[in-house]
Length: 432
Length: 118
Image (cartoon, rainbow over all chains, first blue to last red; front, side):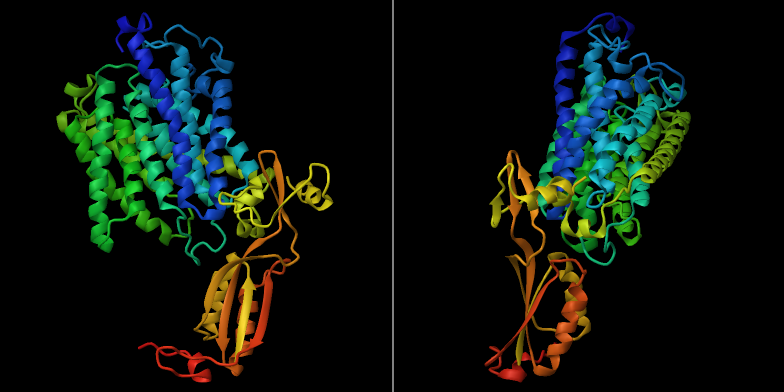
């Protein structure tokens, strides 16, 4: 990111960033698959559709205002509106990079999309689809874009010296602590804590986790905006950290139940990817491996503890993203190494102040995400009920919200003529 | 001896299991079935095709009981399965000619009385 490179667009950097953008975009349907496998069969499509909805809603909001709020200079808290409606976002290189501004915009958009989709994990199987769309639209601007400004867009955390390579602040802590707030406002599923709700397809969960890991190479590897050293380091660390988390998770599973679980493995992949996200371009490969091992412990503890509470944070976004993101952010404060990142040392290399900068982010980001999401959902809840009725929840959100089933057999299905069948018309008219 | 057949909503199956357990009815079998009981049809749309789903998922309990257990079993099924909406299901009670426990060769009341597992 030297001043020299900023002068013009570099073909190699741009080619990689185009590919990285596509890789990150894939993470949203991959997350949909991961989430869909974790819910009951009757809510498969609704859960998947919340992620798909983020592709529409978050992209549009990002183009209209989100990008500007995140990346226009503005003040320390919030960006300005210079880039609103993609004004002035074109072929010239984005300042500080050697890639066209449009590519930078698209790459950052995919982050906003997947983060918005992540929050849905807290409210699946009961939140109504319409209010979720409204929530997603507002959240992607009021929470994601603001946190992205703090960490990447020249906001106060970045100015203060907090290091966040690929989104520990806006993506991971932002989604994790928002998920906690969302679960508290929307409330637990019917019969939560009384009946066991089991994942209906562990194969989806594993495949989703695998595709997420694949996409994460673009997520972290692209966050250097070039093919330079930082990107290369981040790319390789994205391989190393989750591998170590996975191994430690196996050991924890063995110690707890004498069996290694598949859904545990899928979770470990996510936890590892999340933990390395903020630190990817700042720590050496061997520290990245250590981070993978360290990050497994608090997330595992939260996953074991959370279901014993009354908080139905359904798909454990807080444990996998909030907690692991927080660990990653703090870990930079210890293990950052100037020799590897050309930016700053951490406490282990004589710069204890860095740990303070990181701790500041680890307090501010969760507090903002939690408070803002809590308020936002309460506000939406004043205008329309956030959750489905008990009867609808029992029937399943797929049929209620989408009029489709993931595993329709077609037995007993009677074709309805386009104009005929008064009864069918009545059912359709009764929908919102 | 009667065979009590209860057809209930799948989402109420757990509640039925719980209330059967409370009434000390221990032996039963359970199958997933599809049926139609006059409830409002669901309308689904797949691309351009709109269909009326005439069959709903149900769970069918089959419970063979001695005569004094018939009423408690019916009560337990009702308590667990009722929501008050159309589609809660039905209970059928049919006479049983003969029951044999395969393991011991016990017949009739002896065979439908649950064994206390030690």
